[in-house]
Length: 132
Image 1 (cartoon, one colour):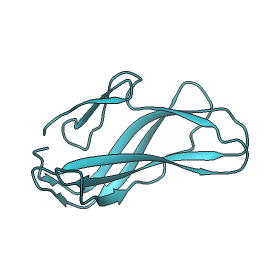
Image 2: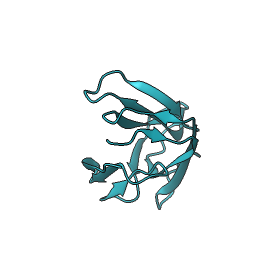
Image 3: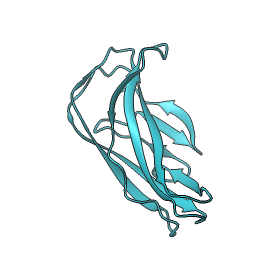
Image 4: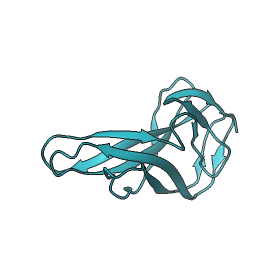
């Protein structure tokens, strides 16, 4: 990755989401984890878990969610790899609805950590990793 230091601060993940189907009384909110692994994918280190987003609704157009995470300084080896894991916190009963999720749009997205883009997606598939 080439990045060896990420300064403390509030980092933001911007995503779009829509709840499909309204069976039951489910309240659904996004959150994410940030961490890093070594160059072989081992030694997984969780850095921080974000706040919860606002509630994901069934109202078109897609809802926009900015999910904040307050992180301390992170020191990395030059070969470490950062990761983001997106989750949904759900409460309620009944039929579980589906979620449609995208980053900036449906075809080309990026993830920013107050630095240059790290991951680039196309149709939900990771197509490149930018060295920063």
